[in-house]
Every structure is written in structure tokens, then in C-alpha cells.
Amino acid sequence: MRTHATCDHRHLALRRGSRARRLGGCLVSLTLVALVYLLIITVFPVLRHPVFLVRLFTSSAPSQVTIPVAGVRKRQISDTWGAARSGGRSHKGVDIFAARGTPVISGTEGIIVRLGTNALGGQVINVLGPGRQVHYYAHLDRYGAFKVGDLVLEGDIIGYVGNTGNARGTPPHLHYGIYESEGGAVNPWPVLR
Image 1 (cartoon, rainbow, N blue to C red):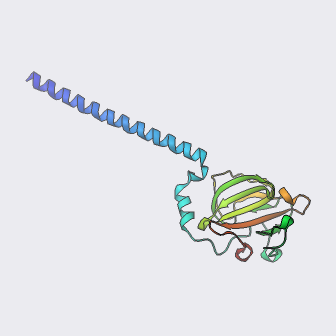
Image 2 (tube, rainbow, N blue to C red; image 1 turned 45 degrees about the horizontal axis):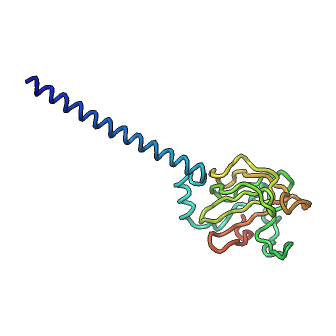
Image 3 (cartoon, one colour; image 1 turned 90 degrees about the horizontal axis):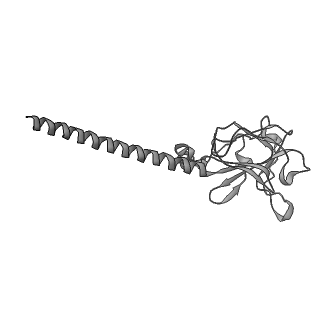
């Protein structure tokens, strides 16, 4: 009798130990997955919001976009698409003139995929929006409170009007462009509202 009880007790202890090892293995696996995820979103912060990212990729491009400078009406914006620019270039967007420091707002919901500088645009922000379109905001005086990988909603302040980059010496304005994932730049003026 004593032998049988001892065997049952040992068997129960072995099962508990096996369960503990499996649980420990699961915790190690979950920890590794979490560390890999943290590494990926550190290197690619855009991937912090995978569900939202999938929605942006699978939705249609908007037929209307909010004018990305606070207080500006469409009648105040000239359709300068294709106008001649220095170096034999043509204008790939619209210029929206406003006082320096006027808030620049996101024309769509999206994820900030780039925040930095370049020679032509100066201080720029790229927002990946619905339909895989990239909305390009250039010549900013300064940035808003967002960083790469952050979600933005239509109307969020992402920066402020300036004249950085090749716009130095011109009146402050926002250069706003829309780029298709396939096909390049498209005229944003017709979709502004």
C-alpha cells in the first residue's frame, strides 16, 4: 500500500514538473516573441500599428482630402501642378500660402513614415494614408508633436508653415503633394476640400 501511494505521489510530482517545464518553455517563447517584436518596431516604427497599417493598405484612396493648412479655403489655392521649376523640373504638388507658424494639419488619417529634411523640401513629413498614398508636407518651419510610426487622424496638427529647403527667400507656404504607390505624383488640387 505504501509503495502504491508513493508511486502515485511521484507520478503526480512528475506531471507537475512536466507542466511547469511546459509553462516555463511557453514563457520563454512569449518573451522571445515580445523581444523580436520590440526590435522590429524599434527598427521599423511604422509596424507598431499592424491592424491600422493593413487597413490603410486595403482601403481606397480618398476622393477628398482636407486642405492641410488651418484656415485656408480652396479658392485661395492656385492649381500650380506642372508649373516650371528650377533645374528643368515641374511642380509636383500645390503651394498653400499662409503666415509663418500657421498649423499644418494632416489631410487624411495615416501613419507618419518619414519626418526629416531634404534639399528641396527642407523640413518635411510623409504620411502614409488610405490607398497606400503618401502625403508629402514640405517647407515646414517646425514639426508638431508626432514622430515616425505615430498614427495621425485627419485634422491633427503635424507641423507649421515655413519656407525651409529651396523655399528660402519666398513667402512662407506649405508644398503639399500626393504620391501613389505605383505611378508617382498626382495632382492634389482636385481632391482638396
